[in-house]
Image (cartoon, rainbow, N blue to C red; front, side):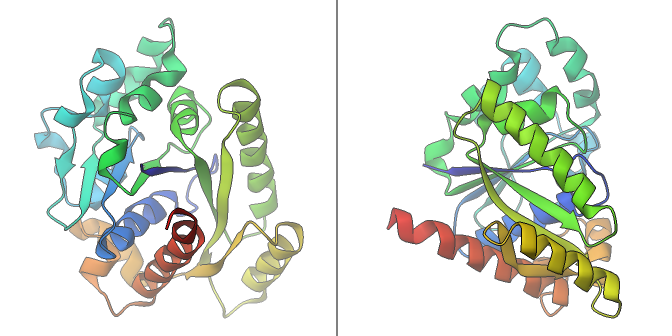
Length: 258
């Protein structure tokens, strides 16, 4: 059965989609069948693996609103072991359409059970807000991975996402865990990044991943080419970081399932 991990932070611009796309690709490159689920109306994870959103006949919208079978919506990315459940602009109206539906928070959870035995990992890229789409992702997930930018307001953003996780645990998914906190956009040339990293380590020593994702121009360029970083520039520091993160995650998870 797949481990379902949603990648979430209510603060935008923290490397959430970058992490979803590149961690999924790195896990797939390790020959772990991986499904990337894009539940963000911006659809950046979809384009980030080379999908043309304008040409997709179906998307996750059809799953949430029309309750289409998930097997009919999953797309092969062309990268070995990596599939995507894509998002298009149609998803922007889904929250209003779901507002009066019974069991609206459970739509994604019920759908993913149909394919959970086909993958080792399912990663869900969430919108940068607490809305019904994010709640669907957290209700479906086993755990939450929190990307955290190394900046002054990092602790404030972390406090908000932890409160959200607590609400979901109490109301919808009691077993939801924290997969880990990932420091992103780390700049070793200044003191700020090191200070933020040190503070997070003091408060969350068990949750913090050892891997730190640096600021990297090649990592920033890759989405415009529709490629995960390991297929755009395998020699870059960004690629090295996400491959290391995949190894760290597998070392945490897989001895337990061996």
